[in-house]
Amino acid sequence: MLEKSSVQSFQVFHNPQESAVVGTRFHLCSATHTQPLNLREDCGSLDWHRQSARFFYNNADFEFCGAGALVMASQLQLDSDKNQFHPFTSSLGYLFWLGVHQYRAAVKLRPAAASPSGEAFFGLSLSHWFASEKVYAAPIALAALIDFQVPTPMRQHLVAHQTTALLYHLDTRRQRIYFRYFTGFGEKIEDMATGSAFRYLHAVLPNENLDYTVLQLSRNGARMRCHKKADTIIYWGAVATIPQHLTPGESTYDQPA
Image (cartoon, rainbow, N blue to C red; front, side, top):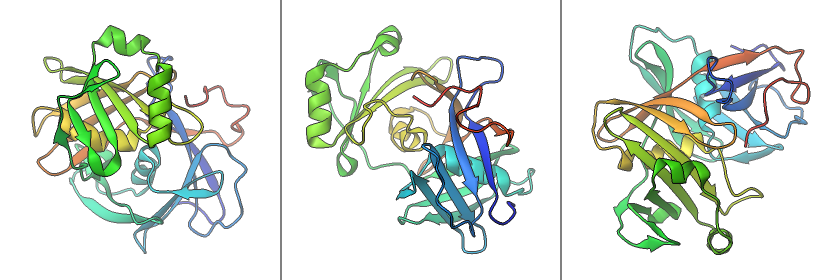
Protein backbone atom coordinates (compact mmCIF):
# COMPACT_ATOMS: atom_id res chain seq x y z
CA MET A 1 0.00 0.00 0.00
CA LEU A 2 1.00 3.64 -0.35
CA GLU A 3 3.22 5.31 2.20
CA LYS A 4 1.85 8.20 4.21
CA SER A 5 1.28 11.40 2.17
CA SER A 6 2.68 9.85 -0.99
CA VAL A 7 1.11 10.26 -4.41
CA GLN A 8 1.57 7.80 -7.26
CA SER A 9 0.53 8.37 -10.87
CA PHE A 10 -0.73 5.67 -13.22
CA GLN A 11 -1.52 5.22 -16.89
CA VAL A 12 -4.65 3.09 -17.26
CA PHE A 13 -6.38 1.30 -20.14
CA HIS A 14 -3.52 2.04 -22.55
CA ASN A 15 -1.98 -0.38 -25.03
CA PRO A 16 1.83 -0.52 -24.89
CA GLN A 17 1.90 -2.09 -28.38
CA GLU A 18 -0.30 0.61 -29.92
CA SER A 19 0.76 4.20 -29.25
CA ALA A 20 -2.61 5.61 -30.37
CA VAL A 21 -4.35 3.85 -27.46
CA VAL A 22 -3.18 6.08 -24.62
CA GLY A 23 -6.03 5.54 -22.19
CA THR A 24 -6.25 7.84 -19.21
CA ARG A 25 -4.33 8.82 -16.10
CA PHE A 26 -5.15 8.56 -12.43
CA HIS A 27 -3.29 9.81 -9.35
CA LEU A 28 -3.59 7.78 -6.15
CA CYS A 29 -2.73 9.24 -2.76
CA SER A 30 -2.76 7.66 0.67
CA ALA A 31 -5.93 7.72 2.77
CA THR A 32 -4.15 10.03 5.24
CA HIS A 33 -3.21 12.59 2.58
CA THR A 34 -4.98 15.87 3.41
CA GLN A 35 -3.17 18.46 1.28
CA PRO A 36 -5.00 19.70 -1.86
CA LEU A 37 -3.58 18.30 -5.09
CA ASN A 38 -2.90 20.82 -7.85
CA LEU A 39 -3.73 18.31 -10.58
CA ARG A 40 -6.38 18.82 -13.27
CA GLU A 41 -6.82 15.07 -13.62
CA ASP A 42 -8.75 12.37 -11.78
CA CYS A 43 -7.37 11.55 -8.34
CA GLY A 44 -8.37 9.36 -5.42
CA SER A 45 -7.51 7.51 -2.25
CA LEU A 46 -8.36 4.13 -0.75
CA ASP A 47 -8.85 3.07 2.86
CA TRP A 48 -8.61 -0.71 2.92
CA HIS A 49 -9.55 -1.09 6.60
CA ARG A 50 -12.71 1.00 6.30
CA GLN A 51 -13.40 -0.38 2.81
CA SER A 52 -13.95 3.14 1.54
CA ALA A 53 -12.62 5.15 -1.37
CA ARG A 54 -12.58 8.73 -2.54
CA PHE A 55 -12.55 9.99 -6.13
CA PHE A 56 -11.98 13.66 -6.83
CA TYR A 57 -11.16 16.11 -9.62
CA ASN A 58 -9.75 19.56 -8.84
CA ASN A 59 -10.27 18.58 -5.16
CA ALA A 60 -14.04 18.15 -5.60
CA ASP A 61 -15.42 14.65 -4.92
CA PHE A 62 -17.34 12.72 -7.57
CA GLU A 63 -19.15 9.40 -7.38
CA PHE A 64 -16.91 6.90 -9.20
CA CYS A 65 -13.90 6.64 -11.52
CA GLY A 66 -13.50 3.45 -13.54
CA ALA A 67 -9.78 3.92 -14.14
CA GLY A 68 -9.19 4.88 -10.52
CA ALA A 69 -11.01 1.83 -9.19
CA LEU A 70 -8.84 -0.43 -11.33
CA VAL A 71 -5.70 1.28 -10.02
CA MET A 72 -6.94 0.64 -6.50
CA ALA A 73 -7.58 -3.03 -7.29
CA SER A 74 -4.04 -3.34 -8.65
CA GLN A 75 -2.63 -2.03 -5.36
CA LEU A 76 -4.41 -4.50 -3.07
CA GLN A 77 -2.04 -7.41 -3.81
CA LEU A 78 -4.77 -10.03 -3.46
CA ASP A 79 -4.17 -13.72 -4.17
CA SER A 80 -4.02 -13.87 -7.97
CA ASP A 81 -5.20 -17.48 -8.12
CA LYS A 82 -8.53 -16.72 -6.44
CA ASN A 83 -11.43 -14.94 -8.12
CA GLN A 84 -12.35 -12.91 -5.05
CA PHE A 85 -13.93 -9.47 -4.68
CA HIS A 86 -14.30 -7.12 -1.73
CA PRO A 87 -16.95 -4.36 -1.42
CA PHE A 88 -15.97 -0.69 -1.20
CA THR A 89 -18.05 2.47 -0.95
CA SER A 90 -17.04 5.83 -2.39
CA SER A 91 -17.30 9.06 -0.40
CA LEU A 92 -20.55 9.82 -2.27
CA GLY A 93 -22.07 6.43 -1.48
CA TYR A 94 -21.36 4.45 -4.67
CA LEU A 95 -20.86 0.70 -4.06
CA PHE A 96 -18.34 -1.28 -6.12
CA TRP A 97 -16.07 -4.31 -5.70
CA LEU A 98 -12.29 -4.68 -6.07
CA GLY A 99 -10.65 -8.02 -6.63
CA VAL A 100 -9.15 -10.52 -9.05
CA HIS A 101 -10.57 -12.09 -12.21
CA GLN A 102 -8.59 -14.56 -14.31
CA TYR A 103 -5.36 -13.69 -12.47
CA ARG A 104 -5.81 -9.96 -13.17
CA ALA A 105 -6.76 -7.08 -10.90
CA ALA A 106 -10.37 -6.27 -11.73
CA VAL A 107 -13.43 -4.25 -10.72
CA LYS A 108 -17.01 -5.49 -10.43
CA LEU A 109 -20.07 -3.27 -10.87
CA ARG A 110 -23.83 -3.64 -10.81
CA PRO A 111 -25.42 -2.72 -14.16
CA ALA A 112 -27.70 0.28 -14.54
CA ALA A 113 -31.41 -0.43 -14.96
CA ALA A 114 -32.24 -0.44 -18.68
CA SER A 115 -35.40 -0.28 -20.75
CA PRO A 116 -35.46 -1.27 -24.44
CA SER A 117 -36.18 1.66 -26.74
CA GLY A 118 -36.95 1.91 -30.44
CA GLU A 119 -37.22 5.69 -30.50
CA ALA A 120 -35.18 8.00 -32.70
CA PHE A 121 -32.67 10.43 -31.25
CA PHE A 122 -31.30 13.02 -33.68
CA GLY A 123 -31.15 10.49 -36.49
CA LEU A 124 -29.99 7.61 -34.28
CA SER A 125 -32.17 4.59 -33.48
CA LEU A 126 -31.98 3.98 -29.75
CA SER A 127 -31.56 0.47 -28.35
CA HIS A 128 -31.84 1.28 -24.63
CA TRP A 129 -32.88 4.08 -22.31
CA PHE A 130 -31.50 4.24 -18.75
CA ALA A 131 -34.22 6.42 -17.29
CA SER A 132 -32.90 6.79 -13.73
CA GLU A 133 -29.59 8.10 -15.06
CA LYS A 134 -30.90 9.82 -18.21
CA VAL A 135 -28.60 7.92 -20.60
CA TYR A 136 -29.41 7.00 -24.20
CA ALA A 137 -27.71 4.05 -25.92
CA ALA A 138 -27.66 3.72 -29.69
CA PRO A 139 -25.92 1.32 -32.09
CA ILE A 140 -24.07 2.86 -35.02
CA ALA A 141 -21.89 1.63 -37.89
CA LEU A 142 -18.21 1.51 -36.97
CA ALA A 143 -17.08 3.98 -39.65
CA ALA A 144 -19.80 6.41 -38.58
CA LEU A 145 -18.83 6.01 -34.93
CA ILE A 146 -15.19 6.79 -35.68
CA ASP A 147 -16.06 9.99 -37.55
CA PHE A 148 -19.07 11.03 -35.46
CA GLN A 149 -19.38 14.74 -34.71
CA VAL A 150 -22.07 15.86 -32.28
CA PRO A 151 -24.51 18.07 -34.21
CA THR A 152 -25.38 21.37 -32.58
CA PRO A 153 -29.05 20.47 -31.82
CA MET A 154 -27.92 17.24 -30.12
CA ARG A 155 -25.30 19.10 -28.10
CA GLN A 156 -27.90 21.65 -26.99
CA HIS A 157 -30.28 18.85 -25.97
CA LEU A 158 -27.63 17.00 -23.93
CA VAL A 159 -26.71 20.18 -22.06
CA ALA A 160 -30.25 21.49 -21.57
CA HIS A 161 -31.62 18.18 -20.28
CA GLN A 162 -28.40 17.00 -18.55
CA THR A 163 -28.49 13.74 -20.48
CA THR A 164 -25.88 11.42 -21.96
CA ALA A 165 -25.56 9.49 -25.23
CA LEU A 166 -23.62 6.22 -25.41
CA LEU A 167 -22.96 5.32 -29.07
CA TYR A 168 -21.58 1.86 -29.78
CA HIS A 169 -20.78 -0.73 -32.42
CA LEU A 170 -21.01 -4.41 -31.46
CA ASP A 171 -19.00 -7.07 -33.29
CA THR A 172 -20.48 -10.29 -31.92
CA ARG A 173 -18.27 -12.58 -34.02
CA ARG A 174 -15.08 -11.12 -32.55
CA GLN A 175 -16.64 -10.47 -29.12
CA ARG A 176 -15.66 -6.84 -29.39
CA ILE A 177 -17.52 -3.60 -28.74
CA TYR A 178 -16.51 -0.04 -29.65
CA PHE A 179 -18.05 3.03 -28.02
CA ARG A 180 -17.98 6.79 -27.58
CA TYR A 181 -19.64 8.65 -24.72
CA PHE A 182 -21.15 12.14 -25.01
CA THR A 183 -22.54 13.95 -21.99
CA GLY A 184 -24.21 17.25 -21.20
CA PHE A 185 -22.48 17.43 -17.81
CA GLY A 186 -19.34 19.49 -17.28
CA GLU A 187 -17.29 21.52 -19.72
CA LYS A 188 -16.57 18.88 -22.35
CA ILE A 189 -19.11 16.99 -24.42
CA GLU A 190 -17.05 13.82 -24.99
CA ASP A 191 -15.91 12.01 -21.86
CA MET A 192 -13.76 8.97 -21.09
CA ALA A 193 -16.40 7.54 -18.71
CA THR A 194 -14.73 4.13 -18.55
CA GLY A 195 -16.50 3.18 -15.32
CA SER A 196 -19.96 4.42 -16.24
CA ALA A 197 -19.82 2.83 -19.69
CA PHE A 198 -19.57 -0.72 -18.32
CA ARG A 199 -22.74 -0.26 -16.30
CA TYR A 200 -24.61 0.55 -19.52
CA LEU A 201 -22.78 -1.87 -21.80
CA HIS A 202 -24.07 -4.74 -19.65
CA ALA A 203 -27.48 -4.27 -21.33
CA VAL A 204 -25.93 -4.13 -24.81
CA LEU A 205 -23.69 -7.20 -24.65
CA PRO A 206 -25.72 -10.24 -25.78
CA ASN A 207 -24.18 -13.18 -23.91
CA GLU A 208 -23.39 -13.89 -20.28
CA ASN A 209 -20.20 -15.59 -19.08
CA LEU A 210 -18.18 -14.37 -22.06
CA ASP A 211 -15.19 -12.04 -22.21
CA TYR A 212 -15.44 -9.00 -24.48
CA THR A 213 -12.81 -6.55 -25.69
CA VAL A 214 -13.99 -2.97 -25.18
CA LEU A 215 -12.44 -0.16 -27.23
CA GLN A 216 -13.20 3.50 -26.69
CA LEU A 217 -12.73 5.57 -29.82
CA SER A 218 -12.12 8.97 -28.22
CA ARG A 219 -9.01 10.93 -29.13
CA ASN A 220 -6.74 9.01 -26.77
CA GLY A 221 -8.85 5.89 -26.68
CA ALA A 222 -8.89 3.12 -24.14
CA ARG A 223 -8.58 -0.65 -24.40
CA MET A 224 -10.33 -2.77 -21.81
CA ARG A 225 -11.72 -6.25 -21.22
CA CYS A 226 -14.94 -7.21 -19.50
CA HIS A 227 -16.91 -10.28 -18.45
CA LYS A 228 -20.70 -10.14 -18.33
CA LYS A 229 -22.58 -12.01 -15.63
CA ALA A 230 -26.32 -12.08 -14.99
CA ASP A 231 -26.39 -9.25 -12.47
CA THR A 232 -22.86 -7.80 -12.54
CA ILE A 233 -20.11 -6.89 -14.97
CA ILE A 234 -16.38 -7.31 -14.33
CA TYR A 235 -13.73 -5.27 -16.13
CA TRP A 236 -9.93 -5.07 -16.23
CA GLY A 237 -7.10 -3.63 -18.33
CA ALA A 238 -3.54 -2.35 -18.36
CA VAL A 239 -2.21 -0.35 -15.39
CA ALA A 240 1.30 1.12 -15.47
CA THR A 241 3.08 3.32 -12.94
CA ILE A 242 4.24 6.68 -14.29
CA PRO A 243 7.73 7.56 -12.95
CA GLN A 244 7.51 10.23 -10.27
CA HIS A 245 9.93 12.53 -12.08
CA LEU A 246 7.37 12.88 -14.89
CA THR A 247 4.84 15.45 -13.71
CA PRO A 248 1.53 15.78 -15.56
CA GLY A 249 2.91 18.72 -17.53
CA GLU A 250 6.08 16.85 -18.50
CA SER A 251 4.71 13.39 -19.20
CA THR A 252 5.14 11.89 -22.65
CA TYR A 253 1.54 10.67 -22.47
CA ASP A 254 -1.25 12.70 -24.06
CA GLN A 255 -3.91 14.28 -21.93
CA PRO A 256 -7.18 12.37 -21.69
CA ALA A 257 -9.80 13.44 -24.23
